[in-house]
Length: 431
Image (cartoon, rainbow, N blue to C red; front, side):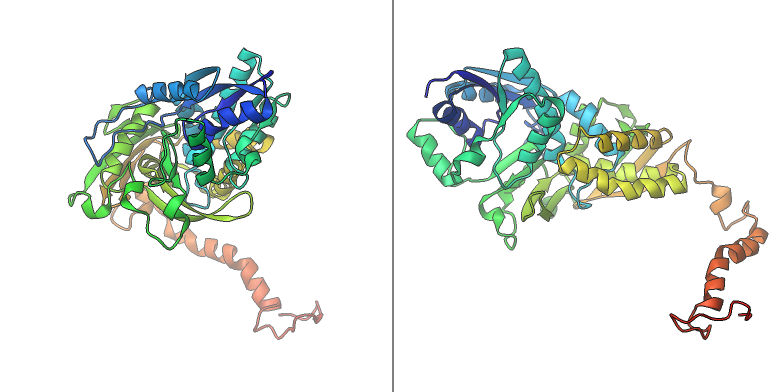
């Protein structure tokens, strides 16, 4: 089919998006512009090898661009968005302690609205009619890409070639081989990998059996705890306005800070997540995540909030964090409720500043100390030793008033009141 339309494809360089370029030309008449967004997916240093990583913007992204052209794209762009990802997406997630199901730090979910934003920008720059993604019909990312596009560019069509063609991964590999499409995957290594600055995910292959332990080759950013150092390592994170700004007193930009924490925590086996996840589309899936920096930074931030947030504010914030994470997971980044939550979270972070000391050891990032000039912990009120400034003489009246509703209930309706449920006692009869 001759191409008479132009489309921008979110291109990862993997199997599905490589096949999609040719498929969109043959079946939909699109000429494709590939857009690869660099959000740190080349990864921090590998703790299991030399300790020297290639870093964002490396030659790997250049290979991805060339692969897109080799697969038939009429043009290909690589966008350096690592800093943008860190500041505009990871930063708010840190402030909100965003963990889906209390476990998953939203590695992929955080990146999708950013990637879509760049797809839209590229489409408008090239006069494209549509954008496209490489998601299947049973995953979450299709929702994230498409709903984000609806929110920021409702005039554009969104194509989902993988969802349409219905090919299994095996069939897609055969389809690519028949057309000499270069793909970086083999039948011996069938994992589907998604990676960025905030972490790494792995799916498919033997990982689809939730009974089987993930093979060693699945993990890249952390060591097995059996091979982690026997001696613990301490790490101190400094925060200002709820954002990490320094490691062991050395100020770093957020990108470099995350990479540094990822390297050091990964060396101790921190951040491995193996979970059964409730997908947006209604199925359960087995997910493997590797997030040394994310889990370490979030642990520190939560602990510092306990020190700095007023009690009622802290309680309300904790109650909304799961909902905030769910909005991101469900692809609702650019929505009114998310915007309102962001305003609340930003206000809550004004006094979240200080240092948190963590001990990295055998898969754990344990908080062992915290301090803040803005903290609400007052030694004189908390101590039982000399210098106790808490006036205990006022406690009796406080307890009496606090327990008054319970006391009245017990007298009028409780088990010892003699009143059966459904009966109407004489209101004039004293309890």
